[in-house]
Length: 335
Image 1 (cartoon, rainbow, N blue to C red):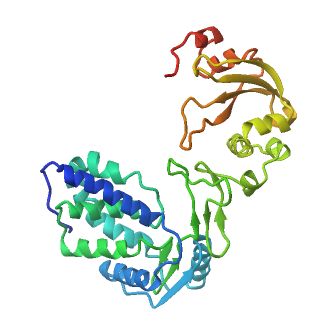
Image 2: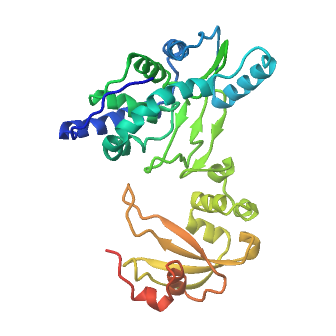
Image 3: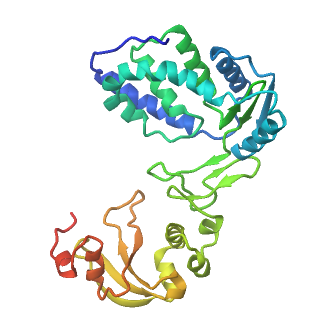
């Protein structure tokens, strides 16, 4: 059974600063792109097997992407289904069981508000680095684990520069990191110029502010494609990709009403009628300007769909807050 000390002293200012630094280092590692150090990763995988009590894999197979890795794993497990079994759950379970049970119970109250809040927001990039970093940095703060748990933790940390990997009895499938990885200012997968994630074998993922989308949303959004898209969230992303002003012009939307935005001084709001053949349903759209300035000093324009019987721009703006147009006009102004 795993044993660990329990720290009860409050964190010092220097330690709190160190948490932020370690989070930044872990984020950079988890979001890293380019060739993986294959010998180091293979050594980490072998150590993961050994420290979990399993025989090291005789065959190590490298693929360029998680898609290729999943394909290779599926083919090999089908071919060898009578000769072995998957160890992924066992390897993960061994470490989680010994570190994650007793240790989590002992540390949770002390670390939850400080360490976990700092590291828990890290993106799931390479492998399972966020939760590994949680336990690894606890060790830096004076928590000690037994030798077996330390070995397992170090082994899995050594594999954290891989992309996904699949451990089996006798063989393991490893995959390289992406060649490209892009995200928005909130850490969500996003790119307005190409795939958000791309791998050396050509497999890629297209995403718009965290939502996975078809390639055309980024490369060639058109009124026709937007109108044919049945998923409202993808449709919204495609319009944002095109740009709301451009969409309004290209789709020939008819201006119903416009007004100064009382909740966003200095900005105008416009209510447009959207033909059913464009949207798939009869709606109206309120075109607004974001109340806050984004990085780069711009204010993003965006559209909100409102019921088709909405008569004025102020009524449309109020509808989003459960207010009438008159109530919205006298509501607290944005400062």
